[in-house]
Amino acid sequence: MESKGKATLTYGDGKSIEFPVFGGSVGPDVIDIRTLYGKTGMFTYDPGFLSTASCQSKITYIDGDKGELLYRGYPIEQLAANCDFLETCHLLLYGELPNKAQNADFVDRVTHHTMVSEQMQFFLRGFRRDAHPMAVLTGLVGAMSAFYHDSLDINNPQDRDISALRLIAKMPTLVAMSYKYSLGQPYIYPRNDLSYTANFMRMMFATPCEEYKPNEVLVRALDRIFILHADHEQNASTSTVRLCGSSGTNPFAAIAAGVACLWGPAHGGANEACLNMLQDIQAQGGVAKLGEFVAKVKDPNSGVRLMGFGHRVYKNYDPRAKLMRETCYEVLNALGLENDPLFKLSMALEKVALEDDYFVKRKLYPNVDYYSGIVQKALGIPVSMFTGIFSLARTVGWIAQWQEMISDPEYKIGRPRQLFNGSTTRQVKPIDKR
Ligand code: SDX
Image (cartoon, rainbow, N blue to C red; front, side):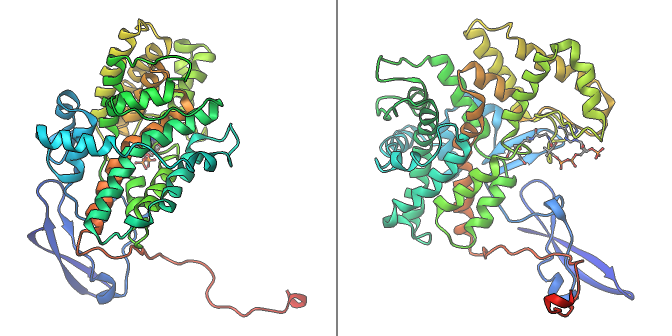
């Protein structure tokens, strides 16, 4: 951190206190208030952490006003165009894009960790077949900590590295197993002769009855979707992983907490909610009904939101949404679905919203979830699996952020405080006196 002078707080009867101001390599400076409570007996108050930096990080930088997203300094547009998901995983985990030899070694290590214990299939049997895949995945990821007693010492860098590899390698297998279980179909084992994403598509869509040949255009599209979802600074699920991991628990339990948080419709569950929203509008009349729907969204009493729009940080176009729309177009064209009614409806709805003052005034633009549902549906992925796919891709971001925290000498268990406005001390009366 670079010292940027002081900030002075005046409070009470003319008291004042100074706090150091620090700057990073780019982005907003921070006021270091760690001594605030000790010196003033007061807390800061920031529900939702809109103005709070919870940590230092070198992994992902977002400029919400410019609509900019960098993974370790590389613009997301360049990574999506020039790299694949495992190269991006290497970058997020180790800080650099791999050269050819490093890439081959990383791909080999991930490839040889894609199988899960045969015991896992019995764990799934405890769920109903129609359980939401995210409920199943939360359980499966948490259960992984039951299989790796030999490498759970979070203070051992080798244990941290093998746990990261196992999570990245096994998430596709677990996500595909949760899907196959919901279908009542047999699980498909991973294959070492396929790329990471082709392997996942085969585990999702192949059956033992015939050979499955992944469509390279669709594989590339899904691999890019993984890149776009890989990390995103201190979002809700990443902050959950950091807070959970700060207790010293094992990485599988911390990532399971991230999966559970991502499931929410305000977060990673938005792509499922967005597609359901588009299908509802389509069922009620499609483009002709857009005006009515947007009017409902603008009515504060309706509780209706335009899912896939808005973002806590982006007050400009989410750069991932642009890339997702391009990918959507490519996939629909490759499949001869360029007239897909939902895609046309989503673009019409985007146009209406971006020209409406309600959205313009609130700087509400499409986010990563707005188009991802349409392209995943075109890839044959069912709506209920969208957030599982998001979890698969975000696992590398979660585990990279967890690693950064655990190896940060400054880290300590997270423990926020509160402004208490409940009952002050009162005496218990015997039940017959209450
Ligand atoms: C992800 O944090 C991350 O980085 C997350 C993520 C990642 O990669 O990890 O980017 C992934 O979670 C993307 C966001 C997916 N969620 C959705 O698409 C759900 C719909 N959007 C929202 O509910 C909302 O926009 C949030 C939750 C994303 C952001 O909410 P904020 O920043 O807390 O903003 P807010 O709820 O305070 O809204 C500000 C105003 C309000 O209106 P007023 O009270 O001022 O009149 O904008 C309105 C809101 O009602 N508003 C919306 C809206 N989003 C905000 N109105 C209609 N439709 C929306 N989608």
